[in-house]
Figure 1 (tube, rainbow, N blue to C red):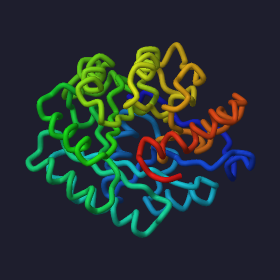
Figure 2 (tube, rainbow, N blue to C red):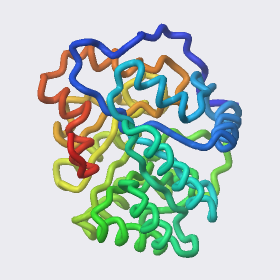
Figure 3 (spheres, one colour):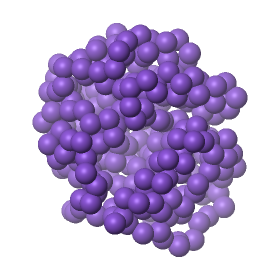
Length: 295
């Protein structure tokens, strides 16, 4: 049983003309065979994927609609996958200059630090992890070398460590409500003050707790992916974007693994009539600072 259904909402042809330049800071780029496996899982346990595109098609789709830069994310589902995925991402970055690539590693796998360093040498700008898929807790001993390696090399760490979306019909190896909570993240923020961390989906569903963490820690960012779409269950009360720290929130979509129009959240942002500086920060500046790259 899936937790959501497809939405047949209309989609725009391009970003609004009056918008500042846009970086989508949450775009998934996987090899074809792995995308197929991921979509089969989504079809069974989550929601129907509206845009079943290959990585080159994804880049062309977003670029042709006005997205200036794309932060490419992936994650390894088991030990031994990361090197292949990282080489794949590095090659995409070579072919498509608008793509900024992030690497991955499986927590606890052999030579994890070496795998990360190799990825950084290929030009990848950080590490992406997913606690629901890789079944780690932030205070596991295996995480220490990941934190230390990122911090030592001035690389960013993107971790899906929010508790949602969790599917009650899927048997997780470790319950996300046990491994993922803001207190575990605060422990990391305190102990690794030089490590830049982004938590996607505004930290769903601990929105208020993450809002408070942002006020206390300069090394924490969040992204908006799927949190503004009025789609996911268990996200009440809905987050108020202007309540979040203006210099620590990044725009992202989770494209292509979404069940609704590619610009659904852009249209919601447009309707909010956000202050100009807030919007510019959200759509590009904050991500550039997080990644330590030039705008």
